[in-house]
Amino acid sequence: MKIRTILAASLGLTLASTTLAQVVGKPEDQIRWRQSAYHTLAWSMARIKANVEGTYNKDQVVEAANVIQAVANSKMGALFQPNTGSGKGWKETRVKPEFFKAESRDELGRIAGAYGKEANEMARVAATGDAGAVKAQFGKLGESCKACHDKFRKDE
Image (cartoon, rainbow, N blue to C red; front, side, top):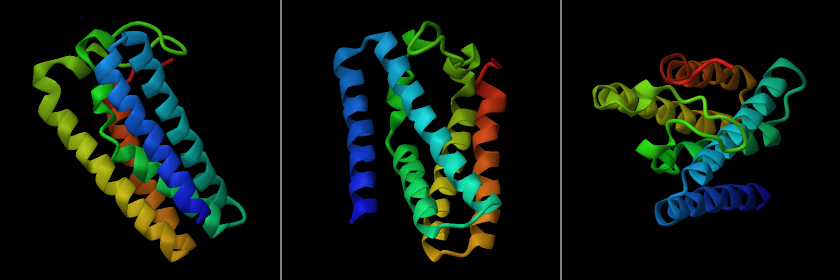
């Protein structure tokens, strides 16, 4: 029940943010909301990493994987409006200008689709409790994150 509550809350917050972004439309809000989502993803990835590198706790891994899956499937692409390529949310956005170019759409779609696939698979594998399979899938999920970072995120 606790996992469902966390998943529902995470998904609800993400969907609310997406709806508000379309209604409110303030670039700084959209940047802040997406930065918050990415920080949540980073925290969830760190939780899984700590488990596969240390003492494995299936419940923690499942919770983190479900959050990742929820955010990956939340349609948060709505928070990347053309007027959000520069500016500040919690900090300056690190999205590269290439992200917003028409010629990047196909590649972006491919990268985002691969990330969604790996996030869904991470949740499925986490539910099995097989630490070795989780570690292998965590590597695939990390590579799908890195593909977008390499192409569309500025270094700090």
